[in-house]
Structure formats: structure tokens, C-alpha cells
Length: 294
Image (cartoon, rainbow, N blue to C red):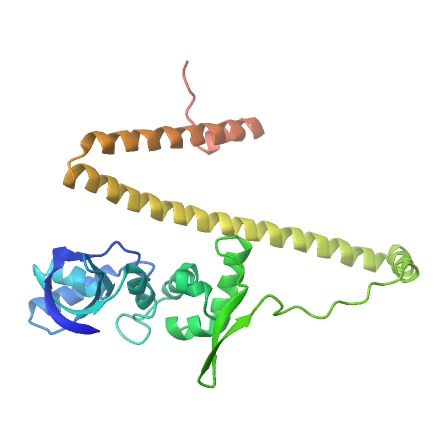
């Protein structure tokens, strides 16, 4: 159920994880603001009302532009729904309208959809249609997130084919029939041939090296994603602590929390600095580690 209504911009929540773009485009916001100031008419933004809060699900550039143009109110299409429903809806926003999405925008939306509670129960093809990307993109990201244990491997998923919906067991998808175990004599023959053939030894060593590089690459990729996640969480934390002190008036509590966080980060810094210097004293210079004076 949905209806149109004009809402105060200040009443619309933008911090519910409903922004699937990697970043808002300042030039687009500026262009929209100029158009609004010239009385241009934009489509209503989409918000979800959960009974207490209005969550923006589509129209971040328009809301920012309206504020930049000095408006206090904005026309909204209001849908009844939870924050999770607003998030799921937002992953499909902009796939056919608005500012053209970048590759990073699409990847962010796919990852967010897979991490969403709905993403664990539907197929890759359904997510691909919802987000507006190729199914291979969804499959690749699902494999990465499962490998990093950010999402569990699906045991079952909802599939819609020929107008019928059913639950499919996914535990055996991609698994071939178990191959017959080679006999001891066959294994010995293979090992002997490998020892006698220098080319086979080179191929085995090369395969081992490639596997090692792949594992390292996967770990580096996982670490990079965790660092980005940490940065996003830190930004949200700063927003919440600011609200706790400035709006709620609990200054002492806000200061206590920030002090605890600062001490925890300082402890992690000290631990890593010790490891870095132990590995190579020159790392103190390379990493800008300040000498601790007693």
C-alpha cells in the first residue's frame, strides 16, 4: 500500500543502510538543486513508514538537492513497511532511472542484497533480476562472501520456474559423482611417472605456487572488505555518538564510550606496531611509528 504526501526533509531518515550507491555525486546534486530553484518538477522520492520513522529508499540525490535549494519539504511516495523492506527495495532503485550506476554501485548493491536476510533464501538469478545485474556477478559475490564466512552457505533456496514457486536443496549443486579411488598400484605408477618426468614436477610445483598466490589474494581481498566495513561502521558510530551527546544530552555517556573506543584502538595500534618493529626496525620509519617515551 502506498500514497503520496509532502514530508519535512528533516523527518526522513537517511541512515538505514538504504543507499546502495558507492557514493553520491556532488555534480548531480548541484544540477538538481539548480533545476529545483528554477521550479523544475522531480518525481516523488520513495520512503517506507514503519509506524514511527520514514526511511528513504529511493531519491538520495533529490533529497540532498532539495535541501541544498533551501526547501524544507519534499514530495514523497510513502509505502508501509519495515526498515528491512526499505533496504530490499533500495537495491532495485536506479537500475532503470536516475543517475546511471557505476560498476561500484552495482557491486555494492549486489553485496548488500546478499548480506540482507532476504538474500539468503532466494536464488542468484532472482537477486540478479531484482538488482538489475548479470547473474554471474551475483554468483561470484556469493562465493566470495561464503568463502570469507560473511554469509553462510545456502542449504536451500526459493526458486520460481514456469510460474511455480518451490524450495530447492542446494547442498549438492555443483558436486559431481564420487570418483572411484585409485588402487595402490595405480597410485604408485603415477608417483613414479611424476618423479621420472621433470616436466611433471615443474607443473606440480607451478600448480602449488599458483594455489598459494590465489589463497593470499583471497585473504587480501577479504581483509580489504573488512577494512571498508570497519570504516563504514566507524562513520555510523560517530553519527550515533554525536546524536547521544548533542541531541539526547547524555554528554558523559558519549565521552565515556569514545574514551573506551580510543583506548581499545590504541591497544590494537600498540600490538601491531610491536609486530612491525620486531619484523624490521626500519618499519618504524616506513609506517610513521612514533617512539614511545618512558
